Image (tube, rainbow, N blue to C red; front, side, top):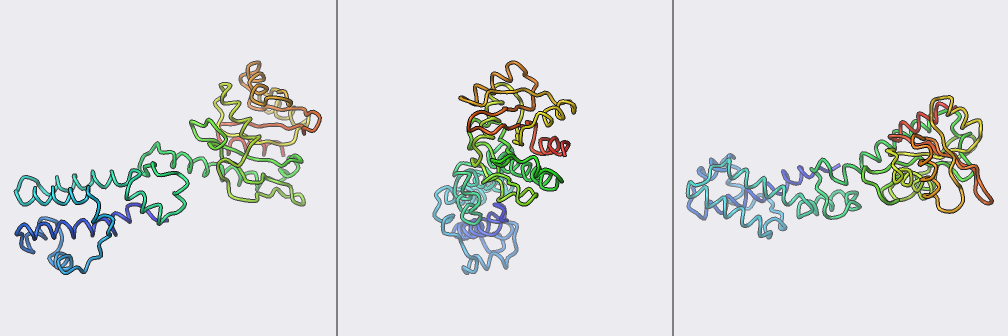
Length: 298
């Protein structure tokens, strides 16, 4: 785990300070005056002056960093800028470089896992796609642990396998829905989760979830289990509202019709057709809630 702040502290800051110290020395500052202006020791200034501090070339060559150094250096030298303003000016540039820019690119090099979120994400943005996606995956992992530790869950897995899926707040496509690659399967009476959850790997369960949301349901997660009239009855006895939907043709249309007739339904089921296995879908606010509902059946 590599934080972007570590790159700022370990690579950007030494480069920036070295460049600024050099700029101030060129403007006639003594070593002690440079140390005072930058709030560092004279020995640190000496290291900068003698090239003992490694500079990251990308920062040295970046025009915005060069302009920052010149602006702050001129301000400090002319006494028109206090060190605190120099700090603020530097922070503004740092935030700019973090937002899908040079620092973000270096961060992706050192944390390749970030590459899947594209070039424009801002890691400090509380509403960023990255944060939303990771929260979904974290919640999904918790829900999967509940199912994995539920005795008897394997008996609820249909022939096509089960999946537990969850979506981002503004989900519109299957790529916005995370699930288990390859689905959850019954291996000798034990529910087996073959891989870590990912986005865009579920098709049918994700389609049902998206269709329910498009129809006005506020759910964010879903799972499929085998259909049985007794299972539906048990869910109804537990206080869940159920609704059947057409299993042939357009899934979205079938789910929309079912929810139009029973808008509060959080359990949707299809009784099957030629070549279509009967399936029951449990919907909920989050993956843990869905998993807990299924656990109540065991």
